[in-house]
Amino acid sequence: MTEKFRPRLGTAVQGGAQLGWQLTLLYAFIFLFTAVVGSSLTILEFPPEEGLPGLLLANALCLMWAVLIFTSFFSLAAVVLGMATGLILEKWVGRLRVDVPAAQGGWAGFLTACLILLAIQAFPYMWWKPQVQNIPPSTLWFWFIIPDILYLLSSSMAGWVIQRRRQNVVHPS
Image 1 (cartoon, rainbow, N blue to C red):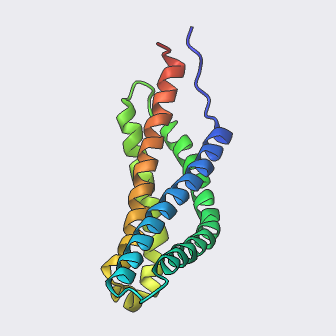
Image 2: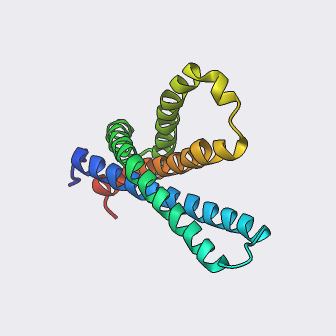
């Protein structure tokens, strides 16, 4: 006898919140590493006559403090976004047939993330179109492209995991 799959909305919301927090930390470490290395290399191009180690340490500590504040603020938004995405994915992937390959759950996660990103990023672009067009490429990478890639990959993986979990409950190996 097979057990009927029941969506676990609490688990989906909790998992989405945890994933949102973890992705925020990953993004923060990527940004911190890039910022510390880049600014340290700039300092090393024109080193002061004395106090170079202290200057490099102060540079790294100031950047760490700024990243900590930034991460604390934006992690709240990432947790809420992760919770909403987990809830949507649990409902949407739950509508797929159980015998559908887990990869289609991954595609459902990818499409969900695309729609959410379109909704989140289209409105500010429409309001601030002149300002957005003048953003340098490095800023676009750190504010949009890297977080979008992380979100798309994690949502795809979450959809795959949800469909795989459904298959394991209905057809245990």
